[in-house]
Image 1 (cartoon, rainbow, N blue to C red):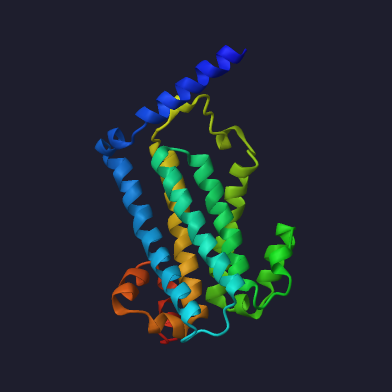
Image 2: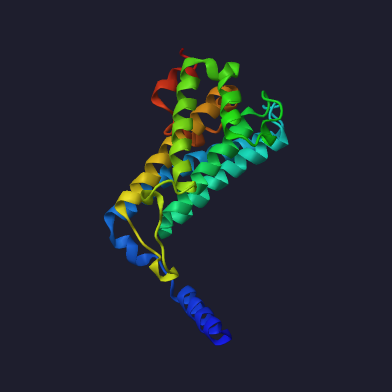
Length: 237
């Protein structure tokens, strides 16, 4: 048995040594999915970097705690890791990280007006408490939260492997890297919607903060605004 384990370990090392992604770059659909995800991820990364900078400097925002800041950064990290897994064709893992990002984002966003939300274990209660806050009673905010909740429930089917279609069916490491146009589109569609919601909600809630951001970074961020929320963000509503 020891010999078989050693032989398989040597094969793993050889696989790692020879592993590369460049062969996928000849596929236009692969590059398109990476491009779409990157554009949204970069806008969220820029926003969170600006948020972190201002929280640390304490120049404009005094009502965001360090705990909230940590959870916002973790949500962005989840999106980035999901993006990385997309490169390799690890679609189920990518979707699981998107689901995680929803939880970390909402904990960051809501912990200042829902006592104990960071410790809530029941996701049913978690969303119920959030839906009942005054902020999410407003029409646009409610719409965005409902969209977020709908995506969360869809992603839960992959986490819990609800049906055969939610199974990844990876039987060996050598299956990677792989590309599936259908799976990549599924991941990208959800990621693009999620980042749009995250960026929009942050810029509504912390509106003064958004208008203090360096103009070039604002140009990057604004491409992720939900169209219906633009009048609110620009104080036209």
